[in-house]
Image (cartoon, rainbow, N blue to C red; front, top):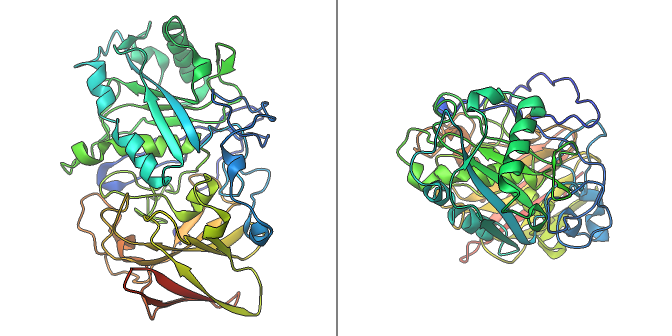
Length: 442
């Protein structure tokens, strides 16, 4: 496990933490995401959600697959954790199943006029983002990006006047920017019709992404400005082109937006101030450039993309049980085994192979990782265990944390927690590519 960064002071009530900015050079991530936490347990309602809207029906965190057998695996974080890996995800975030309408606005500034057309900026991210979510969710999230304003939306003040830089808080700069966006768009846009907001900033505003990445999301923001009677509570801002310098931007540059939108659905950052060494490329909430990558099975459960029958909870002590697993990229079949080690932690077990959003997996096998619901976003809430420590990995993609690329366990290999007397063994694979794992609890 990587050493954990120092925890920042907790936010005051109603004060959003914000995700600090990541430097992409040499895959050195340098920050902590940050977003407000919401106290209700409501689902989304088809518009920008107010945390107080606790009676709404519909898809969202409340659609998490549940059964009595899964209850011991529904770990939760403490009250001080701002954005937890616990299940279910609290309300206030955008819903993550069904039809989700993403209002997408392209903005520029007097001192940074948009270069090229606003529609070309839109096409940097769509339809790729929609297709990525369709594949990741097995069709359960119908993500629809809508751009009712097809030109650059000019802000009334120069970019530098908003004071937006690495680590900028929501107040005052982002609040002023959101207020100006609402004022400029409101004659055309009915904000009540949308679930979340994407702001695609002209790439010539701010520094190059190779130096400092300003892209940030504010989610579940109870203090957000109001538009058409609803708070702009779930908003992602994308700045300079997310180019890692490898020449792969045309294929992979869009994936900063699925990462940022992961926050509006309630997912935390998995990297730390030390970088992406805790999870590597096994989840887009860790590293979102270079080699393509899906979401962890744990996140798919949190988002309501797995049924109860696709999840096994190995909670009983003194048992040895075998489980079948099908590739996470394939629709249907068992996907996740969870081994709880308490009310806040446990081990997740899933099968990762090349396919779907996992198109660049270089070593297929059983991925085993620890989930700690009591560790906050950007502090390392997930840790992937490496079956081949210090191997250097199997990927040759540039600017990728390669060490964990060959982390999966293969038939005949085992993971063991001696302290808790837990053993997870890979028993074999069949001709279809499905695997069997054995979980032994002392």
